[in-house]
Image 1 (cartoon, helix red, strand yellow):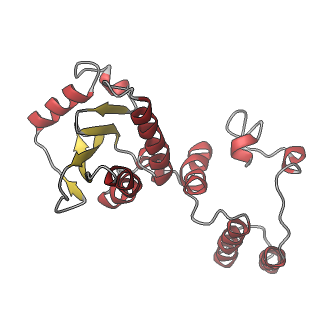
Image 2 (cartoon, helix red, strand yellow):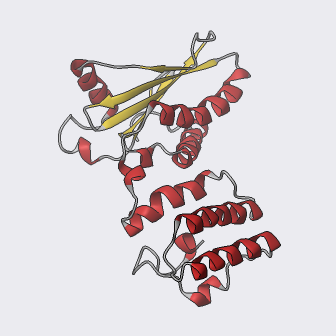
Image 3 (tube, helix red, strand yellow):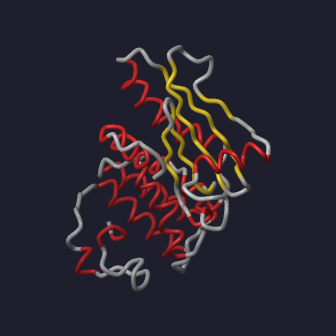
Amino acid sequence: LNLLVGSSLGIEREQRLFKEVLDFPYIYSDDIVSRVERIQEIKNRNGSFAVTDDASAEINELNRTILEAFGLSDNEFVDYALRIQIPQLTRKNDRDATRNVTVRDFEVYGKYFYDHLSAVFSNAGKHIRINIYPVIAKHYSAFEIVVLDAQPAERMTIIGIDADKQKRMLANLSAHKINDLFYQLKNVLYFEENSFYIIKPNYYKNWHPAIARLDLAEVTDQILSRTTGGND
């Protein structure tokens, strides 16, 4: 909440303004109280407020308990804030944000599209296949949704392509020639007759499940508004 609505965090410095915190939603929980007390006992016993292994484990359980109390367990956007946004703001433990995306990451990202679009297109007797291009021009990855008349053998296929095909794909997906201008683009959404592509830098922060939700909403909006005539 402080990240989303605080007037200072990420703008001026990493801080909380107590007056603002008092306006945040509040839930009383005996379990939360007891966990906080245990953390205080551990720190007092050690004679230091440094986070020990024992305290760290208790803090993780406290975080889990708080999220559960607010109905936010396994929430993609909370996970994105904790794993991507806050580490990047504080410049601590931010390796997840810029690490290369993995096949498993693509599988999780793609499931949102597959489940939603399969349900949508099933009414028209159509099927969905996902093609993943993990590495394009070293810095990019592409995600293709193909609409088919027949059920494909596999839901998702990992496709490696040679340098010449990479250039052709970039030429098709980019609004510009393959030059420095293209590399300034963060995200390209391109529709063809029976498929569409999403292409962006291959950092995990760009392919996180929370971003999958946002990308799916954008794709759905463009499909429904019929503004799919070219690059976005």
